[in-house]
Length: 333
Image 1 (cartoon, rainbow, N blue to C red):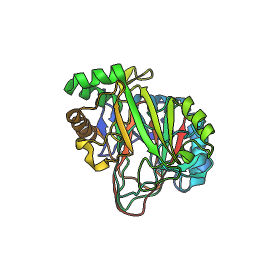
Image 2 (cartoon, rainbow, N blue to C red; image 1 turned 90 degrees about the vertical axis):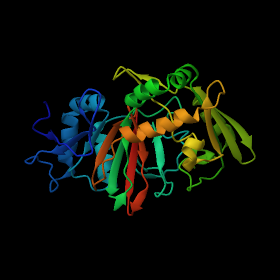
Image 3 (tube, helix red, strand yellow; image 1 turned 120 degrees about the vertical axis):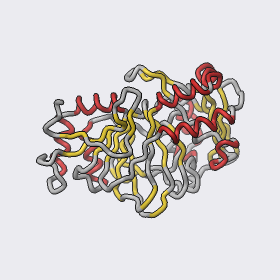
């Protein structure tokens, strides 16, 4: 391959074959005599990224995610340089539901909800029309135990759900989904969808918030200093042109708080079909089970960088068992 003298593909026990037989995700490490081993400067890795970007993008499109392991990325500044080396435009988190903080440049905290809590599977910002197409995750501090970021190929979930619950999927394709969320004016760090409206719309002006929400297809209904956001109907299934496959592109698993998902019940948010019908609990129970069965959860190592195609792959977070853990993120168009 074009990058054969720079990157080598390695195998990890957690990887799984995709529907074409290729291991998911792709895992790249430096060859033993590369100029950017752990003792070398970061710029060797950056130059390799720039030199082999077409191949890396092709690999990302084929495999859905790439884990870079063993490269000299040790700080937030290093990670920002890596993101810049790829050259993808920045995607801003306007309308986002999670509490997160800008650290440096294009690097942000991941969801700031308590790390002992699960964050269910989702495509990033699937509830708005202007969602990121790529995500970078960076492990600045590896977890002592737990705290993985499981990923799963979205087209596999679509195929298995269509086989198991064809009527549910047909309604999803025909009607889409409507997301409802009540936001206060302040962030609620205890919730994984705890962003307040001021943070979500990056303003403390209600009129500006309404304008920004409208551009994202969201209606705001004010309730004093809080607001009810109504988004949709938006597609629950999308066709990914790159892979030529239908994908399970939604936030069903982390928005549905019915009996099958009682762990995340929260009466400040709800989800239904776009025609107003409630979701089937039996279908959601199977959906959650399939997501767990099909996912890959590779334990983080310090310095890991994971590039995810957000159009193809859902991600989640497992509870942290033994601290510390610090995973950072960058969103790209």
